Length: 356
Image 1 (cartoon, rainbow, N blue to C red):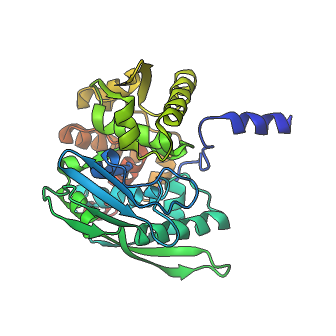
Image 2 (cartoon, rainbow, N blue to C red):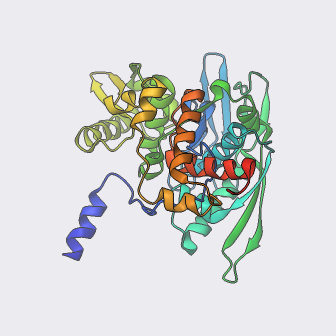
């Protein structure tokens, strides 16, 4: 029975949900949804290879061009991008909460690993350290616009990274990262340079599936339809395979997704030489007019128990009504309602003090 269960898990197109129990205190801010910069969603800045990639890659589309030069450990991978997504998400949540942000960020390594569905074992910490090294050593030369400015630029994804604290067995407790100006510009401008992505993005096994999701998220949004030629997708995914091999992998992914619907938010169809992309119905319906959608938001079991630990005597069910009113006024539904509610409770107590 055990072997059969393990085989079934191995056949799943998704990685296991390594942290199924919600941790409402990892991101105790209003909107801690995963967010990514659109430049690297559209352009192939990260390698799809799961082995060290030492190729110098060049790409151009219209007036946009880029060159990616790997470091001594190879180029930054699509999975290394999780670190940047986490940093961008924390910065955007701080902006939404009215707090200042800085290129230099400090956070618990455990929080990043948990949020991005990574292992929190010793292996998980070693892989994180390797990802930080590749993000710092990979060099990008490009004229891609971020923050409304087009300029020739040579940069790494992060300027530096260091461990501030370590456990006795050598695991990182706190990490300090300095983001590059290029990445930070996209965050500061907020606007159209940042998009919310699904948490299930972190469960996608295959790098190509992650790239297809990113491209779909940027191209389609919540309600539109889009299509690409296979040749165009081949170029913008940054695949190192031959075009026939890419088409074979693409065909298999699309068939798997039609069966399992495991790629978040979108469905794909291969029609001759065209890849058609459209949002799933449930994804589009999630973006109904805000007041109607907010009424349908159901908080998970356990969130009120978590909120009571921060509520300083306030009635959390009454605070939930205030939270929903705040969301209706803002005209938006958070991608992480539980984190948003707990963050609201914390903010409310900071503003009003303990209940009398």
